[in-house]
Length: 258
Image (cartoon, rainbow, N blue to C red):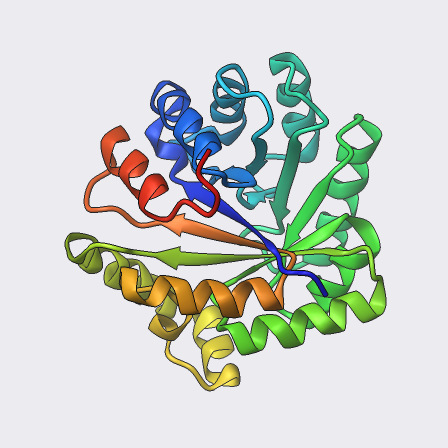
């Protein structure tokens, strides 16, 4: 397997204007894709449209959009109204908080998005049944909060099911001391969720072991993750959510600056 590409993830709550100012630096730094998470206070699709207008070749992706909060028909409608460049866009989806019917909900959402003309869908998947659903219904899987060894094992299993499956892994990354407290708070928050806590226990790791905590860890971690998955998304954890902080992060972690 060839090494995976390196991408950058930012907070959707920054808003379209700020993300439009960050995106050119992400492209110039040589990242493959700009990922933007979708939250109640941050519309990832609007942010991607803003980024598309100021970049030429940068791929654009939503973090996992929970389809119990934003139905696939709504996602498809907004993508069409914004005129997103389909050759550059990936839509990430997940089942959301509602546990009952999660697999069927994701299958139906992926089908709706495909029928609307969106060609590339990835599914956020924690457990084996959702990962299999992703292989069967979408173009790939977005892994989250996993160490390199686990990412490698899961990617190998997914590629065995369907070699063309794209496996991306989100890795929370802080490269300056001033961002460490935010990283630790984010880690503690996820570790408090029962499904994530159970997954960390199953893997035999602490949540913090699935993150990059310092610039000195960046090189070895990227070496391990890019050997494991098709795409590694450095989810930037910065001291404060400013354009300047994210641009600085992009240049400090640049995989292939132009």
